[in-house]
Image (tube, rainbow, N blue to C red):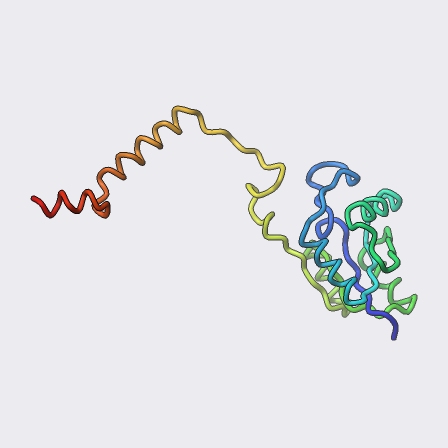
Length: 168
C-alpha cells in the first residue's frame, strides 16, 4: 500500500472554536504537536473540516500549523464519507483522530484504528478559555489574610511556639 494516512478532525483536535467563528479559533497546542509528529513520521494528513468553508480552513491551517511539509488534503465531508473516500482513492488509512467520542465510535465500527483526542485542559468547565471568572471582593481577601495570620500564630509546629510550649 501507499503512504500511511491519518484523518484528523480540525474542530476539537486542532482548533478551539469555543471563542467564536472558525477563522478566529485558537490552536490547541497538543493537537498541533500531534499532527506535526505524524507529519515527521511521514504520514499523509487528511484534515476533516465538516461544515466549514474549505478556503477558511486551509488558510487557518497554513497560519496555525506553519505550512506542513507534506501536501495537505482538506475535506468537507462527514467522518464516514471521509473514511470511504480515503479508502477509495487508495490511501493506506492508519488512524482516525477526533475529539467527538460518538464519531470515533462510528470510525471504530468501520474498522479504523481510532484515537479519541481528549484535551485535559478543557475537562472541567472552569478551565475553558471563555469561563466566567469572578473576582473576590477586597473585604473577603482581607478576612482570609487575617484568618491565615491567626492560624499561623497558633500553629504548634512553629519554632517560636515550641519554645513557649516547652518553657511552661
